[in-house]
Every structure is written in structure tokens, then in C-alpha cells.
Amino acid sequence: MAKIYSEGDGDLGALDGRTVAILGYGNQGRSQALNLKDSGVAVVVGNRSDRFRDLAVDDGLEPLPLSEATARGDVVMALLPDEVHQEVLPRDVFPSLKEGSAVVFAHGYSVHFGEVDVPDGHDVCLVAPKMLGPAVRTLYLAGRGFPSLVAVHRDASGRAWDVTLAIAQGIGSLRVGAWETTFEEEAITDLFGEQVGGSGAIVGLLRSFETLVKAGYDPDVVELELIGSGELVEVIRTQVRDGLLASLRNHSPTSQFGQLYRAAELWDSPDDGRLQRILDELRNGGFAEVWRREREDGYRTMRDLEERFSSHDFGRAEGRNRDRLRDVLHETLGSQ
Ligand code: NDP
Image (tube, rainbow, N blue to C red; front, side):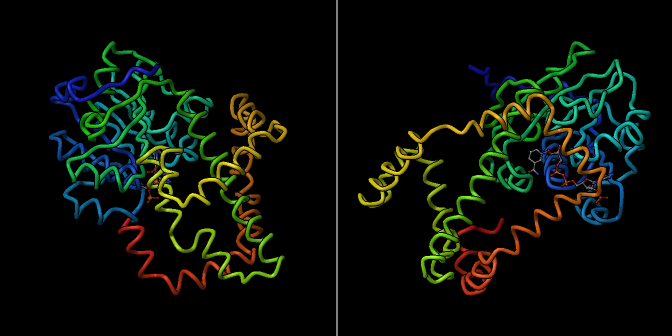
């Protein structure tokens, strides 16, 4: 079982007299910068262009070019999209690292797959919030927290864990807890969750839509049933709150029986090995290689795939229902 750190395990004293440079002011960057600042940590922001400059200034921070922010940081947090780490970190960040500074990532991807190699002599740490960026801020402001995964890849200073846990404390995660992991485990489980859950949802919904519409049912009624009404949000909310199976009691007996009956049918059907194949491709670096080539190729396959799935009839029914239900969905989904 993973070791779980909570408040009391993290000591913000590890950041006393030190500056944290947050590189990137997007989803995670802004929330983590503001949480650390409100926790009393000295923060500077590194940001490339004007896109988030005004926002950072309005937030009371002084955005600097990436290299300048890096040079000021005793702790440097790489909160840039993973796919640009390979290009941006060696060029704009690593040459400016202060002697003995720690580099903190929010996802294990680029380090685990060898896309970046932090220069020797620097701690390499992971504080990966298991939460969307904006919620990292709203939960902190609400006095609550969010879970994270934490790891140390290289402890050059002998204090890498102190820094890791101080960051987890400062962004508000230890209020809930931080699970100890490795860069490899965080990267693989995160990708597996996205790729299996996300692809299953897309295909399950589109195939269900096709089956019902082909049988003569109205596309808008079908889309409303499958996802458009927002009921699914409530279903997932109760699954998280009550537990996957315990939450079934919120459904009618017919629905409960139907879900379990069909689940057993799927569970007992022959395993086509797809999940194992996905895991193998993640672990042997096959997926990372495909994704690296895709980026070099200007995201051509990604654009083709987006076009292929978004031109499906499902999207038209979805658009009509979303227009009609705008206010209701706003209520169901909240402001985020
Ligand atoms: P974002 O896409 O929100 O990052 C945007 C920021 O990165 C902006 O400041 C942008 O600057 C900058 N940026 C983008 N491209 C470049 C570039 N080529 N050179 C310099 N700066 C660039 O990233 P996220 O916050 O979503 O992700 C950051 C990290 O957090 C990743 O490692 C991710 O895996 C991890 N993470 C993200 C989660 C999430 O909820 N999104 C959840 C948990 C972890 P500009 O405006 O100037 O382009």
C-alpha cells in the first residue's frame, strides 16, 4: 500500500528564504502559483508570451521570461504542457538553473520517457495533483484540498523529499493527502486511465447512438438519453461519493438489475487483450514514440481523428440539445 502524507508531514519551513519559480501560467501554473503565494511562499512566474501576462499582473505577480524566472528560483516548477518540455526545458530553463535548485514536475511523463534529462546536481521531484487546474485553486480557497501523487526521481541535495512535501503542503494538497509513487507509476497509470476510460466513453456513446438511430429512434432523444441531459454527471458524482456498486441504489430496481446483468455479460465475454496491449504499449515506450512522431509531423493524425469523430451525426444532435439545455446544464455542471 502506498504511503500517504498528510498535513504535519509537510513543512513549509523547507521553503523559508527560498523562491519558487512557476514556469507556465495555465491550468496548473496559475492555481499553484496563487496557492503557494497565499501559503506565504515567495513566488515568481515564468511565462513566454502576452497571453497570460495581464492575468498574472492582475493576480499581483510579476511575469518574467522563463530563463529569468528560472534563475531566480531555488525551486523550479515545470508547469508547461508535457509535449513542449523536450524543446523548451533544455533550451530556456536548464542553462539558467541556480546551483542546487530543485526541479518539480506535475506529471511524470517527460522524465519517465526520457524526453528531458535534468542536469546533474539538481533534485527532481513530482507533485502531481489528481485534480483539474482551476479546481486546485477553488478547493484551496474553499479551505479544502485535493489528492496528489508525489515522488522523488533524484535526491541530489538530500532534501528533495522536504521540498516535495513542502510544495504539496503549500498548494493545499496535504489537507487531503499525497500518495507516494514513482515517476513511472504516475505516468503509466495516468495515461492508462485517460486512454482506456476516455476511448471507452467515446466509442461506447457513439456506437450506442448509431445502434439506436439505425433502429429508427430520434437522434435528439437518443443523445439526450446517452449524455445530453447531464444525468451522467449525477451518476458519476454518486459513484464517486457512494462507491461504484453502492451507488446503484440511486437507480430503479429495473436499472440496477439491467446494469448488473449486462455488466456480467461483458465481464464474462472473451478478453480480446486490448487493455493489456494498451498497457504494454505504454510501458515499452511505444505510445510515447507514436506521440513524439505525431508532434514532429505537425499533429496531422490528431486533426484527422478529430475530424473523423466530430463529423459524426452524434455531434449535430448534441449541439441541438446543448442549445436548448444551456441553462439547465449550467446548473448541473456548476460554474467550472
Ligand atoms: P497548460 O496548457 O495550461 O500550460 C499553459 C502555459 O504553458 C502557458 O503559460 C503557456 O504560455 C505555456 N506554454 C505553452 N507552450 C509553451 C512553449 N512552447 N514555450 C513556453 N511556454 C509555453 O498546461 P497545464 O497546466 O494543463 O499542464 C501543466 C503540467 O501540469 C503538465 O505537466 C500536465 O501534465 C500537469 N497536470 C495538468 C493537469 C490539468 O488539470 N491540466 C492535472 C495534473 C497535472 P503561453 O501562453 O505564452 O503560450
